[in-house]
Length: 210
Image (tube, rainbow, N blue to C red; front, side, top):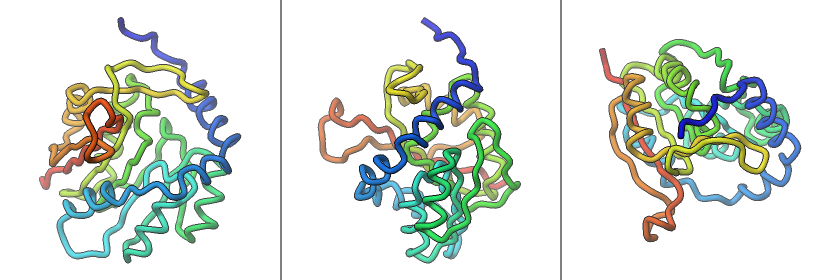
């Protein structure tokens, strides 16, 4: 059954309200999450000589901005939740843009890589093609998009105060390829567990060099 398209203003407002209200708990609960596998998956596919300019799309409180910066890269955050923006700026010292994911304003051909870790699933399916095209446009030719999302069977709706769309690999692949990207790899997380215990689908994509 095709889900009823959501009202986009309520999707953004409700999801951001949830994150703003739970910002401290979220920061403490995710502070020690190990996403080094995901960072490595992005960085090893970027061509050229580092340091790279990386957009941490949905940077949250700024944990990964700090890590990318410590690696020597130029990391810029983008986040919709006001409290996360303040946290990320203070904790990382990085430039952080406050933008709604459904109302992006991104520079053209600017980034070597985009790190979208546990974030694009908040974009409703009806808007996902447009958002992916905007991410495509802000990458340099040959640039790389990393994404990790909780996987599912293409259902979407409200879950615990947040809007989410949970795609399987084939559906996710169709969306990203339709935006112009070429798949480089995909894998499931956490590593080393049976598939039914791997709720996360990670994938890496390249913008072709024209």
